[in-house]
Length: 205
Image (cartoon, rainbow, N blue to C red):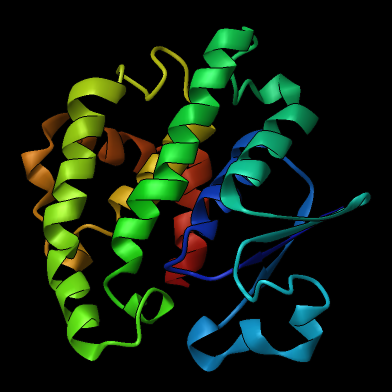
């Protein structure tokens, strides 16, 4: 059985949604990152990066959201969570890589500027720039990358779970999501999917 280490409010929500959409048999371990669960010696044996998500499989532990969002569709192909065509699948990986390497990093500057500098003033400048940088990212996604009605076109994929997760961070970062009409509509439709509703109900419990 798969085991997902997850924290509410984190990017690991995308992996949790993917597991539900795939109909996977898994165990969920909820971490309290504010309390430092990710820095315990026990978790370090699972993921020495001290972050979530971590997916324990029969072959070992997978970390990094794009890797997990590749593994779940590969091991649950009947769910159709990634395209079969090689080019289209590469486009899916490119989209998820952009979310991971650029969009998530833009958000991380809000509270984690210490990862890049010890200068307090520089950290404050990073925090102040978060809304502007995120708006630029999501404007690019809305205008150039999002095909509609789902990220890759007609079929829901793990890209939609990942986009839904990061788009959900915008209000907390001071960004009005309604300026992105297509993405706001997408987020509402993702939230109504049965698998996603099940996941969000767990968060609310």
